[in-house]
Image (cartoon, rainbow, N blue to C red; front, side, top):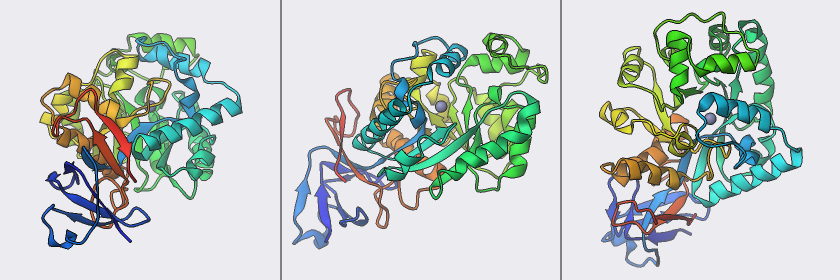
Length: 390
Ligand SMILES: [Zn+2]
């Protein structure tokens, strides 16, 4: 038995919004029909009416569930190197506190309409929560190791962690240019197959660029404080992105996370070398750590594939995709909700290779169903709120 839902608009995402449209889902949440209001097939059907806009569930492209206990623990506006130090020193907590925080964060994400999450881990602690969650997680096991001497062991260690997350979706990913040596990136490239999706923290801070271009800036202090050698790096005048992407295999899907200081010339470089890249924006985390947003218009102008992430509760006070969209719309007023909704749904689903099931209201998919309330027509407002219907 299907249930028929209608609202002021339905936004299927992969096709234009339908005024007064209807979407039908079976008892398992599978979409069995998408209709215009005048469709004769609806004649004898009982419709459940909502005020607002019906959309598919959100895809949160970037999170660290295992840092959920760190909400409010890290100072705002310090810049990235100091933020990283604070996370490393504050991250220890009891197993119970960590677990409780993850369970709550997972529940909150589902309630706020999130259907799919791309989630980074350094440990196996989140495996159980994920296995029991209604959310579909893709887990990225992070590789860290700036000292070339440790490169060989790290990939095998990551494999061990990855094993705990099966049979769910997993891959091994370098953490960031500033935390992975060239040798580690090459070793990873040798050991993964073409299906392994990478998710790399990229140009979250201009200090990353300064380090690789000139070997100057706050990362020198960061390495010194943490006893990490950077002797193997020579200043080469190139930004952090160019210093990492060239050592990763060309055929693998790559998600670039943050991109707060990514310039058009970086995007041109990625396009020129023919990489399959998605740019994941986490605006509230950028405001939290660096006090600024990426220049989103330049990504739009160069027609990049954009997706949305929340990052973790170490750098955000919510794991709420709608709040991320509000932050974007407040700063970039000429963007339409239709555009940013595609970033928050189908683009993330495609990036994680889950668009056969998620990311749009199409027959045969089970993407979840959300009601976005208090919009102004199809324009997002500060008061807009999300309610999960399915
Ligand atoms: Zn992150």
